[in-house]
Length: 530
Ligand code: COM
Figure (cartoon, protein in one colour):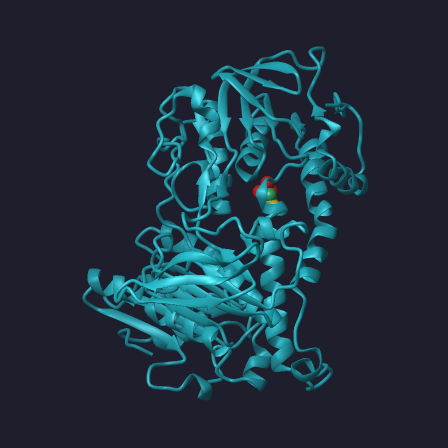
């Protein structure tokens, strides 16, 4: 293996970073990329070495550095930012945006300025969209490396395995580094379910489908195993391209264990919209076997009530069945783990071994960006002597079907168990056919209201009629995810909660999804359903 390159003190322009990372991805044997301060610049021991430079390690490092500490982040990939820009959030968003545009291509087919998608073009290529992402992926990687070095002044070693010798000693790039604390943040990997046939050609997951030598054919029919977020998001994309897709799931869609506070109106709206777009959704079933010789041809599955077995045919089988933390790599530390391999931490992100912290997808809880970043920052704060707890029990949530689906707080069902006077505000309202209701409508759904009424979305607000506190908000359509992260913050942080009256007082930037104006229509007196 090459000794790599030492980039300390050398300025690499942003435009050069992307191609450089791509070169290293093509040929990992090029060795490490080393950006470590020499002793004449900084001879302090590291306050923390972050193993893994994804969202958790990168944000923790930036915070610790800004607090005056010394950090080193080591990653096996030749870029920082972790799986997000490489194979997870960013491609997922590319695919979900493609799904949304394809939805519109069908709705607008042969109308206005749009070509006849339905009859002429008919479908889009999954491979072409995937390859488009791969061609521009380096640019995202490049920003991470440039920003971390030139703007955040981080020390890092990339394209190198880190070997933990003990909690104060790490080996990487042929050198030994000493530290006061260790922060473990190398994330999780998709794990195949234990069914025969998962190794066949044509069986992919969200990460492997990005490899041109794994998904090397244009799929025509897809079977998805799993019913959680990944299954819904990737399944909706495949279907939108014209690749007929079937989902096989034990639980109902959006009722898998990982999702909390899912309101039944919202869940049903999402599932029905997926079916209206032609997807087949089969729940209460478990996969038995992936069929085919060398190439997969379908999935044999069993109804969990009757035991009857059936076959779903497909040339691509997508496994959307979960991930496992990469914690075995740190066996030498003797950390306490849960039954799924997560590293157990306290509210300061410290593990069972003092001076060793863990964050991101290595610890229990949602595999979400905010948790990765906030857990990394929490570890950094505590390492720098600022006692800080982070509890990630409650958070706003979202997924993509061909829509943005966003929710925060309690579902109506949960609210009714806890409060005696629950009021709801809904669009479309109860008793009205969605096809007859042009609301809600806002950014991104105007042409649904014009050309495909009934597909313009769902808005719901769940309120305690006595205290007037907003208990939960749900939305399906576009353009509200940003608003929800702030609404959630207000609902959690305002003393006494965030009330319908306060929401009604918001200066709405009309025309938008309708929460402020609908609440304003209702708050003049005692709250009633709308
Ligand atoms: C975002 C990666 S793609 S990070 O959270 O900024 O490190």
